[in-house]
Image 1 (cartoon, rainbow, N blue to C red):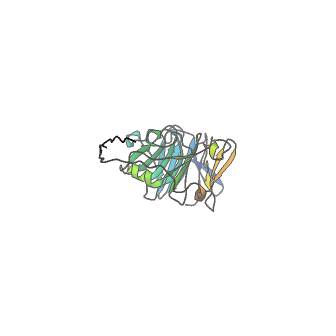
Image 2: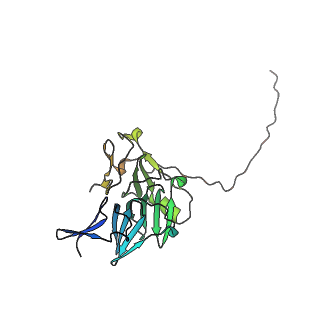
Image 3: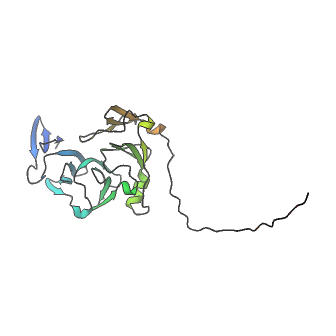
Length: 232
């Protein structure tokens, strides 16, 4: 069935088809009238809400992702599908979250994410996830993020861009979809409080990052030197 899903600020979830807009799952189902993000992933329509967390519609039925999965954030600003079928979630207060197979992994500022309030998620073609917030723009390697989710590392590294890198202000705007986009030629765009910030990932210090060094063994070698007195 071809139509357009419409999330509103105060009017709940709606569906537009053949020029007619009708409400979907109002009242007790959504438990909120403010929809910040929408994403179609296979048979699911994911719904990021203001105050009632993450929800989805599948085969005409409504479901909510409960806190038992590990999802603590109640406000969801952006959603991005992952290549393995998982879902990246930009939250207010809980950083970047990842949902797959009924489990949520939280990656927040304690783990190296640059901000716990994330407004947009944009993937480039070089293996990085770009994020916007009130504290600037940052990128993180998808490999590091997936390694964190799989438990092989305990932190990630954010490369942050702000005023020092050429932005008029570090404050990105958000709260409505989309809070940023990618142009056909791969330019990353984020709206800010002082205009549009545009970045070319191919020219942004590719390959430069910080690495954690794990020291597994070391040797201490002490060599005594004999002192000789020379008389001139």
